[in-house]
Image (cartoon, rainbow, N blue to C red; front, side, top):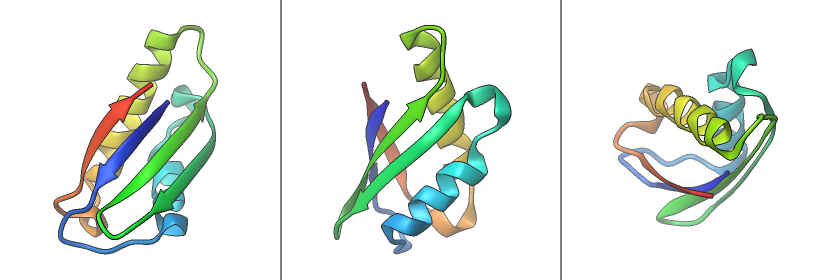
Length: 83
């Protein structure tokens, strides 16, 4: 699953985004690997998820992002997901 995180009030780098993604994922989400690349306005993300269907992968990505964006370090950030 791929998506774009739009920058909020804080600045983080790609390494931090990957760390936040892994920290937000639970065992039920099936996150195997996370990729992130940042620029001045956003972070492009790709989540490699172990899932039975594309719909399950979308739900897992949504759960991960909700948990991740609840962190104070990402105040004001929001996610535009796409597959």
